[in-house]
Amino acid sequence: MSVLIKNGRIITAVDDYYADVYIEGEKIALIGRDLKVGADTVIDATDRLVIPGGIDPHTHLDMPFGGTVSADDFESGTRAAAFGGTTTIIDFAIQTKGRSTIEGLDAWHAKAEGKATIDYAFHMIITDMPDERLPEMNKLADEGITSYKLFMAYPGVLYADDATLYRTFRRAGDNGTRICMHAENGIVIDEIIKEAIRDGKVSPRWHAHTRPTRMEAEGVHRAISIAEVAGVPLYIVHLSCADALEQVKLGRMRGIDVQAETCPQYLFLDIDHYDAPGFEGAKYVMTPPLREKWNQGVLWSGLKFGHLSAVATDHCPFCMKDQKELGRHDFTKIPNGAPGVENRMSLIYHGGVVEGRFSLNRFVELTSTAAAKTFGLFPKKGTIAVGSDADIVVFDPNRKETISVNNEFTHHMKVDFSTYEGIEIQGWSETVLSRGRVVVDKGRMPKTGGGQFIRRARVGEPLR
Ligand code: URP
Ligand code: ZN
Ligand code: ZN
Image (tube, rainbow, N blue to C red; front, side, top):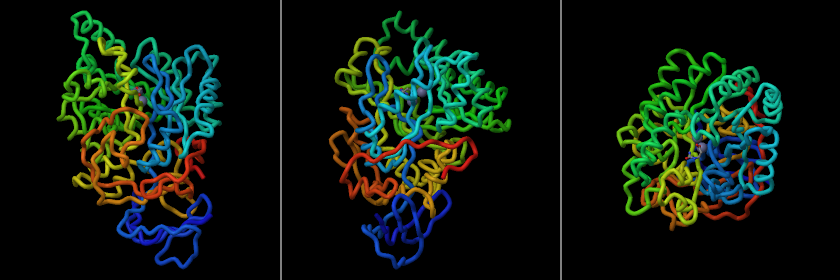
């Protein structure tokens, strides 16, 4: 099969030019002006941007959490991602305490296999790691699982103590792999939560008040310090606020290899969303919580000037009905997480490029290339170049949509609300190719399936 994308404006993290792209099978075979080649499929990209498929390095599909399971599985979640212009996700496999990580990985392979429409990879969530099981981490790296997430939050559930952090950080560093950190001091936060519940403060707003920004900043500081001593590259996930970003900047100024991602929810929404009428504030119960609005400007500047490296979604959808509902009388029982995998590209294009905060190149870097480079997918993914996978979005930079659970062009996620309901965006993923297959054709999906597991390279190594 061959595809020719004609007359588009090609944008990568560094390039900006007009050319045709010729795809043979799964790979980009030729790039040039007015290519004189025949193709099975010809896509006219006049007045469109031709960009690398988005890479979302933080999703939770089919994940048991908070007494329920996230509402999108690998079938619906990857479909929705494709509609939104994302062609690779890195999801999180979970190791159950006391059990092997390999068993956890096998379970996640079983959840995903044969269901995905786009390509996927896994980080491994490590909840405990006694010395005798450390060799598992070598095996994981050989299997293409070259990053691990550990949690300072959620004591008794996913929480890992500092000894576990140090032990896993050391081994990850020795193996040429990377640590992802959920940085919030969950031990102190749990004490604050107990005080709130004792005082009858049980509505969704208290989710935010019991998780102060200082406790996120403390987590970031501690993670950086441990990573520095252990000698491992660090990636802070879902960074939500200025206090935490300051710690990242300080670490980087000291020369520590620390990067951080933020998410659209922290750029577009704020703490006042918890005051939505009735129980509606539960939609925004995610961790870390939404912050005071002034943090948004600091985060946008962080993206612009490079202190923040990437935008992920932390897509972790729970329906209002039957799921968020579990915490109607006690915010601690509201499953933590919100949907967004479908909306990231449009939101970041709109907030970043349309609103004049950064360039088209930076948009591509933040939504695709940076994650590819950080997580061992580059140059197979994350760019438009001869030899790279033909993961390409033909992006309409002028199309306007209002994001809504009821808008067939912005909502395919299997969840009964939209985190970004009513937000108007300019910029829309019109046609999407995953390894040369047209998975979205002008807003319609001809066929589902075809996504593959991707074994990632170690830090600094290319992936072919
Ligand atoms: O609220 C969130 N973020 N849920 C998913 C789990 C996590 O901490 O990433
Ligand atoms: Zn987390
Ligand atoms: Zn997450």
